[in-house]
Length: 150
Image (cartoon, rainbow, N blue to C red; front, side, top):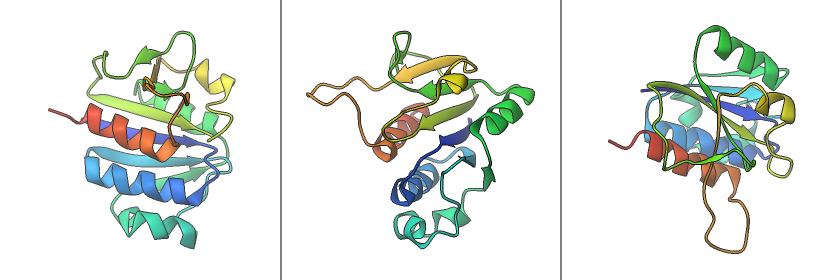
C-alpha cells in the first residue's frame, strides 16, 4: 500500500500536525502535499500536535493544490477526494487501489470544485448524528486506518 495525502488549503496548523501524526501511526503514507494556505512544517503550532511526525513523513509545499494533483496524475496514482457530494461513496464500501492519493479540503469550504473535477472518486464518512461532517484531522485518521486495515 502506498498512500499520498493532499491537503487542500487546510487553515489550522493543529489539524495539519494531527494529520502528520495519524499518517505516521497508520503507516504506508509516502508523502504529504501541503497546498495553498496549508501551513508548512516549520510552524510551531503544527509541531505541538505532530509531536515529531514531520520527521517521519516526507512533505512538500505546493503553491496550489492543482500542482500536486497534476503531479500525482502524471505518475498514474488514482486520486480520491474526501468530500460530501451527490456522487460520493461510503468510504467503507469501496475497494482501495494499492497506490492512492487522498485529498482533504478546507475545514469550512471543503475541496475546491476544480480539484473535484479531476479526481477518480469521491468518498465520505457517513454521519449518524446531527452534524454533517467531522473535523478534517479526525476524518483523515478514520480513512487512513480503514485503508490500511488488513
